[in-house]
Image (cartoon, rainbow, N blue to C red; front, side):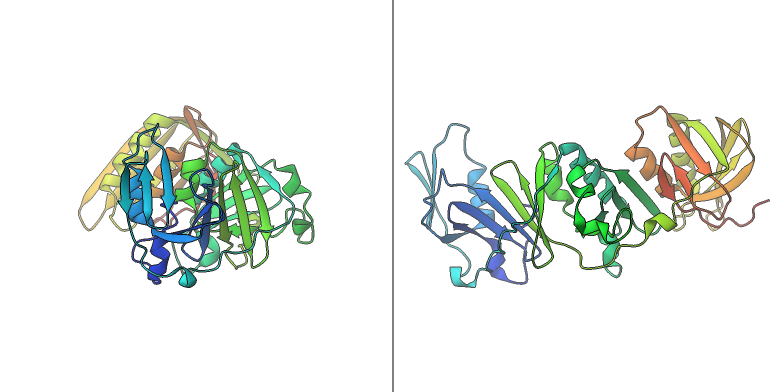
Length: 345
């Protein structure tokens, strides 16, 4: 819940947590969090407490402490009392959204892991809101910032069969889940249940006690399948550690703005180089590789390092597939757009 409650919100009332019907409720308007605390709070009571103060007080508890939560604070073992007052009145707290009654889609922890990994490739550009989240349709989980794209297949049969996607082609138009990385990191090992609701919201339940309600990004997701290259002419296999070290060193010598590195492939070797004309620094090294063809292509080193760190295949080698210096390439299954080199001689 710490990931939902923001510091210094526009509405001060959002610094509080509301207890209602045996649930602890927090919100930042876009996202809501609900935790079942009926064992510690009388169901009939409705009140507010300051979230940060409550969080700090709870952090002092021992595993075997008995806790009672009330409108004036918390009582520990019937002896130690933390008194605290909310910053506002309960009538000013936003009304929680109504729970959706639509069909439930089960999300195994493996699917949540793929969603979490895909967020790393989403955009931070608020001017392109459709790319700030992860697109999910009947077959794919997709994230892109316009320079890189990660697509992972999911096996949620209930989503595959859903009429929500059948009207938009084979895979359907994705719904866009906003960035909830901080929440998913805490519960990614738990299976979840997803259901759609009115007001363009989706509910995700983790176990029996934790539920979040998220407002979907109300934009059309890019038609990503049009940019994914197929039947790539050149495929090169490189040792992961040697290639990672070479790219990292090349990035040090590269221009601080473009981070441009050049990959000069032959059948047995890839020459990794960079040159910063402004600072008169350069780097070059050869890394053994297996492949066919000869091609020179440039990339932003930071993009390559990001893929290598993600390690989507878990292999000791890296697969680099490309057609031409000005066409999208695939590095370990991740689409990476090249950068224009000074020349392709």
